[in-house]
Length: 550
Image (cartoon, rainbow, N blue to C red; front, side):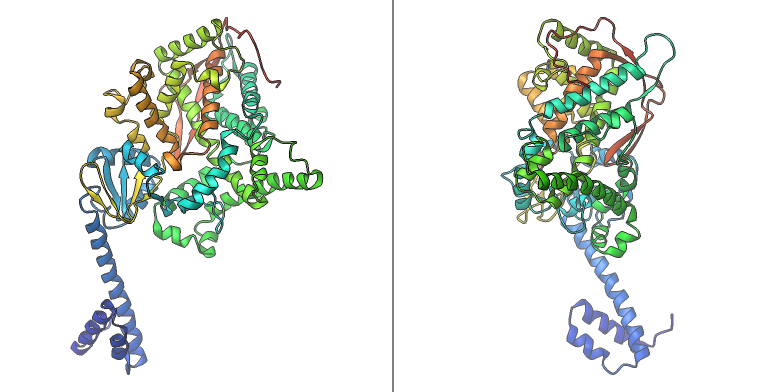
C-alpha cells in the first residue's frame, strides 16, 4: 500500500465522513479536480472504508435490537453462525441444545430467534394473528419465478391457494383415496410375506428404510395421479426421485438460513454454477411433472372426459388450475407428500419393536379388536383405526420421539411487534423459527420422562391432558394456517400401515449396536435399517374382508 501524506489523510477522512453522512454533493465536490490515479485510489479506499463502517454499524444495530435474547455469542452479530450450523448433519441436535441452554426463545442470528415454546408456535400459526411467512421459505421454490403454496410468502395468496387445494389434499374430492392406500398396503403385505417373511431357515433381511419409501411413493402417486410409479413391485427407485433430496437438501437448508444466498439465487449465473445441484434436482422434478401432467391434459383435450379420473390431479384441474400450476404441484407431492410420511412410518415401527412392552400391548389390542368385531375390514379402515387407543397412542408417541422434519419454518413478526409471555418485546420484522424436536421433549407437556418412548402416557392421562399432548404433537405438521396440507392423508397412511404390519408380522432389529444410519437435510433419510420379518402365527382374520385385489 502506498504511503499517504498528511494532506491526503485529511482528504480521505473528509471523504469517508461525507459518504458516511450520505452527503453526496460534498463528496463529489471533494473528488473534483483530482488526477485519475489519485481518484481511483481514493475511490477504492472510500468504498472499503464505507463498507467496513456500514458492516460495523449494521452488526451493532442488529445485535442491539434483540440484545435481551441470549444465544451463541457471535449469532447476534453475523450470519456465519447459522450458516455454519446449517451445514452440520445433526443440526436438530444443535438447535435442541441451544434452547436447553438459552431458554425457550434463543437467538440464532442477527434477526433470527428460535423457539421451543409450543404456545408461541401455535400463536404464530393462528388465523387471527398477523405473523407471516419469511423469506426462509424461498428455499422451497420449484421454479425461479413462479410460486407454489409451499414457498409463497404472501399470506393472502397462500390462504387463497390453500383453500383451493385443500379439497384435493383432504380426499373429499377423491373418490378412491382409501382404496388407493389399500392397494399399496396389500402390495406391501404381499411383498413382506412372499419375499422376506421367515419362520425357520435362513433370514431374509428387509431394509425397512427403503420399503417404507416405496410404500409411500406408490401410495401417494396412485392417490395423486391415478396410477402408481411401481416402486413396490420393482423394489427400486424406478423414477430416480428418491435421491434428489440427498443432492439438494444441504443447499436448501443453508439457502433458507442465509439472506445473501437467497438473494444470489435470483441470478441465473449463480444457479448455473454454485447452486447447480439444487437447480438440477428441481429440474428433474419438473421434467417428471411435465411428463405426468402433460399426458393428462392431452387425454382430456382428446376425450373431454373429466369423470374418468377421481384422483387429486383431476381435483386440481376441475378447480381451474392451469397445466403449469398442476405441474408445479408434482414436486410438492413427491417431496412433502412421501419422504416425511415414510420417515414417520419407519420411526414408529422402530420405536415399537425396540420396546417389548409397547409391542405386546399394541398387538394384543390389534388381535382383540379383530376377535371382538371392532375391526371388520382387511385392510383396516382409517375410521376403525382411529378408535383403537393404543394404536393411536403408539403413533403419536412415535411422531413425538422422531419428528420427520427439522426445518426452522421461520415466520416474520408483524410490524407492531409483540411481547412474549415473560415480558420481553420482540420488534417487528424479526424472524422466529420452530424448534420442533425440543418442543416434543417439553416436560411440562409430556411429563418428566419426555425423553423416553412410552405410548402409555396418552392412555393413562385424563382426557384434557391427552388432548393437549396430541395437539402439541400435531405441531410436527405445522400450526394453524401453515399446517401441512397433506396431514390427513399422511395420518391415514400411517394408521393403516402400522396396524397391518403389526397384525401380520413380528419384526426384529438385526443389528442392535448399529440399527441404522441417518442423514438429515431438513427431511430424514435412513439407511441400512435392517430387520427380520416373521409372519405371526394364528393371526385372526376379520369377519368381513374388503381386500383390494393386488
